[in-house]
Image: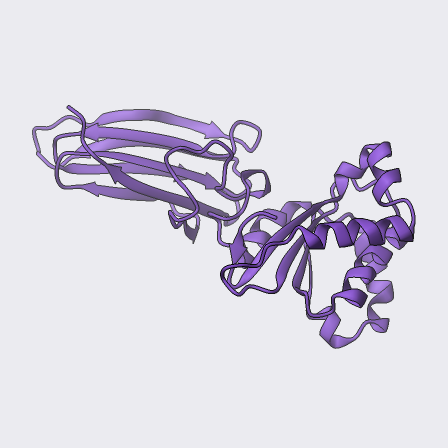
Length: 257
């Protein structure tokens, strides 16, 4: 379980973990084991104290070692035994062969069941998750801003979600210590940061020279700037390809002398 979104607990099922053959044999190898594993997971859910009684299930199919038949049987167990339990099932990192399988069985599924399914291939998985789950709730490894060990920001610090633009400005009117973090879904952009003083005789401060950032470099960029002078922190993001999602947030901390 990881987070809450719009009245649902969010449950991540990472099927790539079943590459561990011992784990696979103990929990997923046959219908009886899958049933026991499902019941064990259900009993761990804690729906109190917010009167939440449904889940949004994220199913990560990256590196899933099993077959489409096994996966369908596992999902059918949940639908058959807990039909009102799952509000939405979002499949991410879906391989082409599974999409073909879904198209084949689609006519046999009821409209109600099909309305719960969302499928996203590897290239659009992060953007799809953000449509259904707030970015501050989505783990960083899935394209969100929720990082283990994060000190400056928590899930209560709301993330702004926009189609990428070139400039973000954070005004500073008095002594302050500004902190921020951002990420671009898909990256492969150029990023720079500087402080522009309001006073005409003031000097700009370059905090980050413009550099290219790819998805392999870093998941989230963090920064901070402390000043006693009014002005603005300007973050510049250059994107020369198609439109991408930009996620960012900031807060002002106490000025330290």
